[in-house]
Length: 530
Image (tube, rainbow, N blue to C red; front, side, top):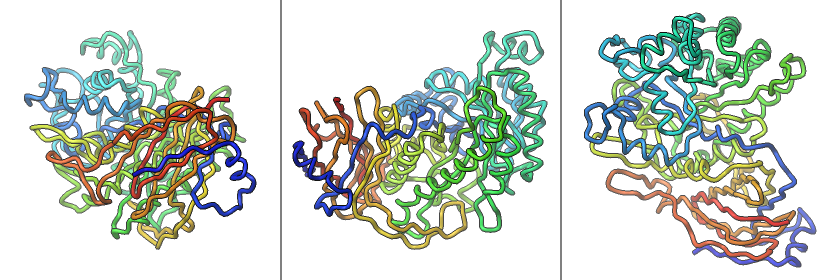
């Protein structure tokens, strides 16, 4: 049972006499004056790639009784809407580096079937640009397109912008109109390729050649529509024989006056079945964020961007992916169908906490991917279930907005062993990892606090204190948890989900005490009055 008790003002004064005092309880101190930056809604984005059953058999399933006349799976769409997704990246991923957008427009029966070389399957092209835009409008998301910087040309990239964003006149704008879309799609966000530093990428380039191609593609695209935002492909290759910082430094130096974001990717895995290593791994993402933030600051001192914002970071691929990484599970029509458990959900909450704590520079993030393929939603022909990772993302995307706060946390810590980090083949070690991982945002008198208790066995009793103002009214409490760290969901069981706990009722209180259960994520939401 969770313990909740109020903390009177005189006790708060004693607690705050010294930051170094030994306290019986852990402490989380909220100070609404210690602000990091505005939380951009786009950090709750997602990703749809033509990979496995993400599109075909996922969001789009022609002939299925659960689909409508357009082939859209209605049960999937309803679950998608629950995530309140503000922006969705499309169509890849590795897929895009050998994709010609022209194959996916026009009458469906006239579209060519192509060999899909990235994930070893056939691509029917029955779902393409216009189908995705229609789907995006139905799920109330902003489309974010990635152009082919591998086998594609800068002219193809320009023509896609023309097709999507120019109202009338030139050839591709008129072609869109012939295809039944008289008004432009007005796609705002465009990525200049995907993971171009990776040797696995079709059309892989070195940093200098990538920057030359990206600069010229961006030039043509911006001449076609000056209002678009461009995202550069940052480092994704963190293997020990490669220097990802060199790639990022070159991209930022060469494209500092061209792009609006630099895209970074990270996938994590619990290869060694070491729980404490795994749940601390998002701290490595935070470390990489700080390094790139420093690089951006250095280049912005030399940039000539006029009145444009500085370059921001887009973590436009992140997730847990390690079980389905053998050759036979990475290709074909059922590729990457990872099944998630509670510890995976806690890591996703850790990613999201890290994005909030770095809200001044992280302005976009896209969980990869939406359905079936390393995804929060899993579908078969007969129905769907929500994976464990669905629930923390849903809580953040529907509640955590406003100004990110620099939260003081005082709790016990632990050290990790060396471990392998997802795609990176490097050993990483974290010292002094706090059992409580915390983020918070303040929005028009309301504070939202996200707390992971990483401890596998113990609850952590915590004093939640307000430095400026008083907690007042009803504090709503939501908890993501399950019977154990390996608990999973499936079609016939839901072991991990969000439970709304009994609210805490406060009246002009300086603080209150809450007991965070082991292996849990908790979100608390209430008011601070001045």
